[in-house]
Image (cartoon, helix red, strand yellow):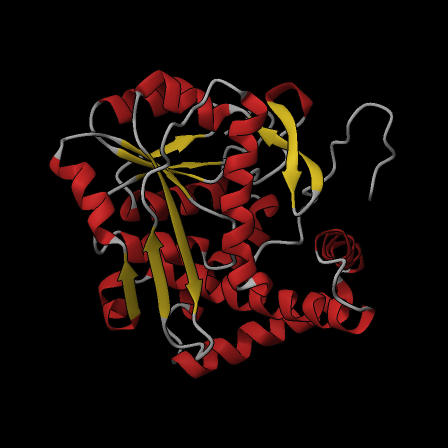
Length: 303
């Protein structure tokens, strides 16, 4: 808790977070069809009312899918908001329910790749993607393999406590994204660490590499962690299936000859995996964030 934060969670600053937590706890136990319907309603309202986020999403879709005509791009923007609305209920389910009740909804492909790493007693760096299903995907993954997770702390102390407790129940350890030593230590101790390197963290920690054909500030930390630990880098894909009732998780083989020593080439390789994963279900990606906010010197901003 920051120094200027109220000392009690009864303070009005936390009332909104307390309401959100209460709604998530209730939403986690709703019947499946009602969850989907409510999630779509939330997404539709956000699409209509969150104009700044809609502009960001429209910009991202136009940049990444120039082959789509204007009508197709508008549909994808709307579908993105609907999918991310459903994702709020999926996150609530992942945080507040025992994932065992969803085992019958999961197909997990490529388990042999992680099983082989575990059999050799190695740690691993799992490369995930910021899909709307992210936290539910983590809960479903825990049914098959243990893992730690790298995360960004929430600005609201009450919601941060709720979120961290939920993730610690799903994962072995929740590691602050700034704690590089903690990540390296856990991997060297033989743990798998789930890490999603697909956001813009600024010029100082990034190189520019293509993402959907657009130069994007791409974090260098993936290659650095792999180099410091010698651990295999395990690409993981996860998404909600078109029936909206089942999910697929899939491990791909560990990346070979990674890192290469070329920071741009390594970042481009990670981006290529993330792009391929997104193209399977593009509406489920978190296009609402400013993926291209940092531009090469002299280039104007997109947002």
